[in-house]
Length: 478
Ligand SMILES: C[S@@+](CC[C@H](N)C(=O)[O-])C[C@H]1O[C@@H](n2cnc3c(N)ncnc32)[C@H](O)[C@@H]1O
Ligand code: SF4
Image 1 (cartoon, rainbow, N blue to C red):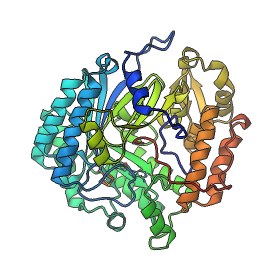
Image 2 (cartoon, helix red, strand yellow; image 1 turned 45 degrees about the horizontal axis):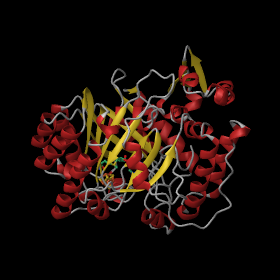
Image 3 (spheres, protein in one colour; image 1 turned 90 degrees about the vertical axis):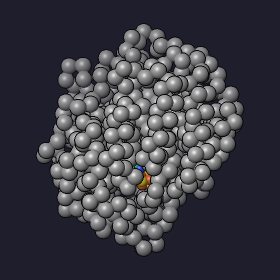
Image 4 (tube, rainbow, N blue to C red; image 1 turned 60 degrees about the vertical axis):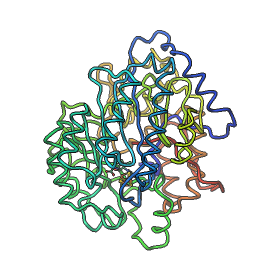
């Protein structure tokens, strides 16, 4: 596993001083054109960010804070204006939305009336497909049987929440304040209204060992939830305050990366004993589709596109990717005045994106290589991983093998386009300097494994540390 794998792709080049708002406005002013010769329709998603939680978990790097009723009201006013401004653009007028993801933060801290008004604003400004998946993230302290009934009534189709661990010691250590009784109650209530329910787990917490990880996975599988997502704790993208407490010895030092990688794969195996494998992180009924927003769009191919609204939201539409202001109050001020609240943008031409995320999705349609003009560029890299036994070809499908699953994140880096290699390296160099809880040899070992997959694509190690200011992480990784 690589020390830093929760990235969005392509990486932003932050060394630009362009007029980002003007670039985005121009991009949205045309309906867009299809990829020449490509007749496959990509998926389109709308992401809506609610940056408020009722309590904060120490590991969580997402844009969030504990809001007051006044701040939530003024944020929602700005969000409605952004939905209107964006929805009125020619590009959005031409879109049909396949999935909506209302995430955070914790959208369930909103009142039922606020959620109803938000859903009405989404439907008034965007055209949703008849079978659109509408996901809603919740946290167990802010739900009730009545609230789930109202969410179902509003047309929400999937609800998801984070348990992270069933171990009371770990939960307390990371400041998760909900009790396990509240967790089980919420699973029961959610199941009464939704077939598609999901809970998130994390593997590799400080002090966690293999037995913990397996037990946690089993408890998740037996909890009555329809699907379980399990993620390795990402110590790179996590909050600096938490890293400091680990560095200072206040918290136990987490197991080494290789050890955590083994724990993650043991947790996966434990889930597979009773659930089907939907992708690298998600387990559930084999016939049920995994999150359309997450695994078909965010981790999808170049033809899949998403637009994000709210503080820190990330958008990628072929040609251009951009980010909204991550400061919730500045966001509210800018958006409230009718301007698009954009602070960063970057050219976005990543035909190889489907290959980069293929190891997370487990399969790749080889017919896309020629349609997207990648055949010559990637033939050697694909042959290399097939020869090494990391993938196999079954008809037109490239499929990750069991040995390939053990190095899935290195395989993602193997498919980076060369300019993206350099940007990734720059990010890793800066992050390695500021993180400190990842040892130099862990960065180097990951880089060596990528290099071993094909010399043309070698990532230099990050041991020559550079000083740098904290780099904002791109997007909403999950
Ligand atoms: C942004 S949270 C929103 C869910 C909701 N607020 C909750 O906590 O129930 C989405 C998921 O991201 C994952 N996550 C957060 N911080 C992470 C980290 N440092 N490394 C890996 N996954 C993380 C957790 O599994 C979490 O449930
Ligand atoms: S994991 Fe969820 S509840 Fe915890 S701080 Fe992050 S967004 Fe908030």
